[in-house]
Length: 158
Image (cartoon, rainbow, N blue to C red):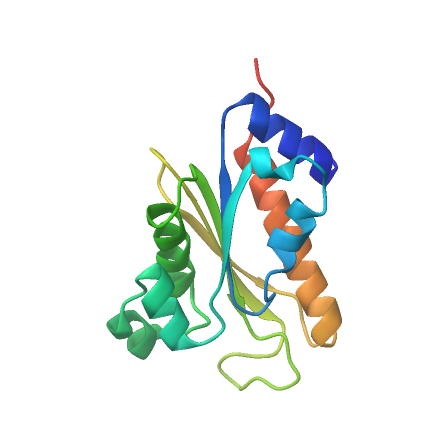
């Protein structure tokens, strides 16, 4: 399904979308808003590159950041839930990861954590290891995966 079809499906279901992005720097929001008419579906996007921004804009807890680090499913969960809480949307996707270059033994380059929050549903989180493909490739893969998560969250209307 194309991004345009994703937006059409969200519009038909009366669902507004918000994004909370770190390592992708707004690429998911850009992919959504590249489509004419997206304002009927895209409420807002949060680019929260620093830990302070995650806390200030999304309400991610300092304790969560200190305990698990910014690249964690726990932070991805709080980012998605914070985006939902601080918007008019019913569906939120979040991304936090290490696009590279660099990383560490414990958090390697290419590790990206995702969150998907929807009103009335438990928040879904997952970690994908994209590998050390290079910054652009990791960011593009993370954007595409986030769009896939949104697609899966919007089943075809009956």
